[in-house]
Each structure stands twice: as C-alpha cells, then as structure tokens.
Image 1 (cartoon, helix red, strand yellow):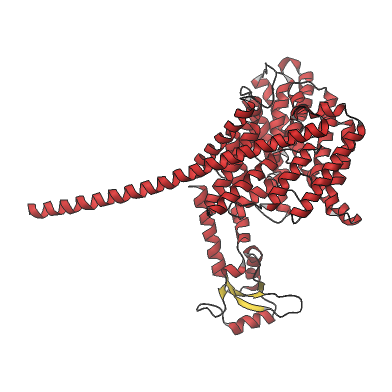
Image 2 (image 1 turned 60 degrees about the horizontal axis):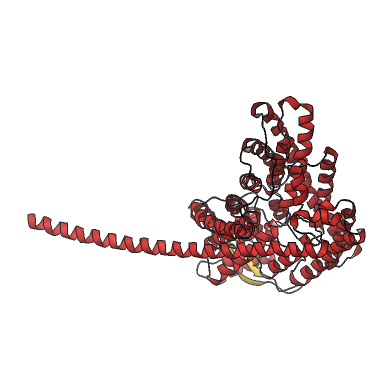
Length: 562
C-alpha cells in the first residue's frame, strides 16, 4: 500500500512538474511577444513624434516665407503690417496648390483627417489610405502655412496613422494589433504636437479607438511618452499658453455661472459644427451649379479667406496668438465677440473649401473667445462674487473643444497640459461636462462621427449598428453546388421573381430583405452590367448572416474588455 502510494505521488509530482514547465514556456512566450510588441509601439511612437515635429516645423517655415512670421504664435501680428494684396493672394496661391495636390493624389479631392482615422480603426483593422494620406499631409502644411483657418491636430493624427498602417502591413498585424498600433501612433503624434502626454494617450483611447481596454493602455502610454520626450528635447518643458499668475475661483457662489457657460459653449460648439457641415454642402452645391473644377475649389475658399484676413488677420493659421490673448484677458468684450464670429466663418470656409487642417485648434480659439466674452459680462454684473474673467476663457476653451471632438476626458486634460493650470479643474470640468452633453444632442455625438454618419458610416450608434457593413454577401454566402447550399432551381425562380442580392452588397443592406421576404435564404448574383443577365454565385442564408454578426459582436466585446 505504501509502495503504491509512493508511485502515485511520484507520478503526480512528475505531472505537476510537466505542467509547471509547460506553463513557464507559455508565460515566457507570451511575455516575449508582449515585449516585442511594446518595442514596436515605442518605435512607432518615436517615428510619429518626429513626424509631428517635422510637420510643425514645415508649417512654421512656410509661414516665415509667406508672412515673415518669426514663429507660429505671431502670424497675426506679422500679417497686420503686410500689404493688403499680399494678405489676399497668399491664401489663393495656397488653395490652388492644395487643389492640385488633392485632385491628382486622392480619389475625391478631399483631405484626410481624424474622421478617416476613426473609420480605419473601426472598419479597416487599423489601416488608413497611404497615398491619399500623404497628399493630405502636404495639403495641410500648405493650408496652415498660407492662411488657412484650421488646426494642425487632424493632419498630425492622420500622418501618424499612415506610419502605423505601414508598420501593420509590414508585420501582417491582425485587427486588434493594427488598432493598437494606430492608437500608439495617434497618442505619440498628439503628445509631440502639444506637449501633452496624458491627453495624448487618452485622446487615442477616447476618440480613435473609442474604448479603454487594458491591453492597449501600456503600449499607448509608452508611445505617448516617446512623443512627449521628442517635443521637449526640441522646445523644452514649456506650456503652449502662458496664463496670468492668479486665477481665483469663488467655488460655491461661482459654479452656477460655469454651468451656464457650459450651456453657452455647447450651443457655440453646435453652431461651429453645423456651420462647417453647411459650408461643405453649400460649396458642393455651388461647385455643381457653376461646374467648377474640383481642383479650383480650395483656391476659391482661399480667396474668401484672404478677403476676410485683410480686416481680420487673426483668422490666419491655428490662431494661437489670439487664443493666448483671450486667455490673458487682453481683448475687449466686443473684440472677443466679433473675433469669435469671424473665426467660425473662416473655419467653415476652410473646411467647406476642402483645404486641409483639423478642427481642434479652431475650437480652442472659439472657446477661449466665447469664455472671455461670457466672463467679462459675468464679472461685470457680479463683481463681488466673481473670480478672474480669464478663468472663464480657460473653461470655455475646453468646453467648446470637448463638444466638437466628443472627448470630454482628453480635452479637459489637454487644456490643463496646454496651460499648466491644474488649480481650476472644477470650473473646467463643470463647463466641459455640460457643453459635451448638449453638443452631443445637436449632432451625432461629435463632429467626426457626424461626418461619418453623413457618409453612411454609422459609428455613432455603436458596434451593433456598423458591424454588418463590414461583411460582403459573397464572403458569407454558401457557394452554388455546396453540400448545404440552396437548390439551384429555386434560386433561379427567386431571381425571376426579383428576389436576389448583388455579391458586393453588405450585410447591412441585405438584412432588411430577409425581414421582407421571410425566406431562409436569398440568391447571390454577380451583375456584369446593364442588360447582361445575372450570374448565380450561391445563396446567403439568414442563419449564416446572424452567426457572422454574433461572432463580430463577440470579437468586439472581447477586444474592448481584454
């Protein structure tokens, strides 16, 4: 009995040791893959950081050439002393160059920005267009350097996404890895562009990936830190804007004012977003009516911008000089109001004219001007219970930008990191939360998601709304003649009755057909052209479409919670 027990214990011990060794091998293999991926993420972060740095320097160089500006923060002052005809002609020439580039190197003559990056993350396994992306980068540099009234965050994000896509293609990354690398590139680019490591990481998670999965957090933070280091090696550890030394807040008495500011900023953000969408529609309508060549559209927008800039040169470029003046209270009430209105018009013209650039920096400027105007009125009415009016400018800056981007967390943090003022967080958070909630009701959650919604890409409603659009009928169907396929004779009968679908159709467009017909399957055909008879490829079964949809939902849920 003892000998049997001894043999049993020996066998169990050996089995246990084999399990430990197997576990150790798996552990080492897992962590080896993890470390390799983190190294790749670091390399992507460094490359994206340098790309963002070069992008910023290219804009500054072009502004020095076009306006004689010493740096990006003083373009307004430089343009004020130039002859009016020069201020007029520079945006026209810039728009002409942009139009030619986008005409020849993109299929739709449209610059790519954050919107396409979000779409690539959701639908294309973390990939974006390479050729069109490079053309968009060049057009954005020219736009921002020659008087376009937009921001640099959109082009920077897309430029980094092109780098991530190239790496993902080289290493044959799957969808999860491709999206993680895309997030790493975006985080590094935002961090390098704005010296904001925390906000850069959260921007990638909140806006681009739209989830906060733990598996993506570490590599994205690594890349974000890398981008920040590159920025600080070049520019030092300095904030983008310098605020007055004292910012006082009478917390309990003044918080209702910041709630009201949030409402005002939400309405302003809605007006800004709808003005850009309206300008896009009107410019397209005008282009069709006069049969304007698409390469001439940015030049026409440049002419309008040049005319405005003759009287209001503060609209030129990203607008950091005017934003800084608003944050320091160096503008009068009527100046803040008029500058905000004119800036909204200029941004709408730039975006509607399909020039280049993003919307984040303009929303910061409009928000700061809105907040300053509100603060001047509030502190004038209630001087005894009010803090500094510049605090309202700071809160307004974050509130409008957060509503436009649909990103309250990362925008709040980026405002803090841009200004270095962490003492007034409560005021900013109150205004941002109200503004974002209101702005989301005026559009499809954000400007980017609204753009996608207008193109038929329904990301705002969540995975359950857009996943079906990722699959084609021919990829899910049962081929003709397969063992469990549909009878060929019955398929031809259904085709003669007009019940069939094209093989290139998405499941999103097909599913209502099952509801209408009540059939278990629908024939899938290939349509060769007008007048040509359809070619029967197979049949799409309702159960197969549902199974594909359920698997996709499960995969998304696993990725977001892993």
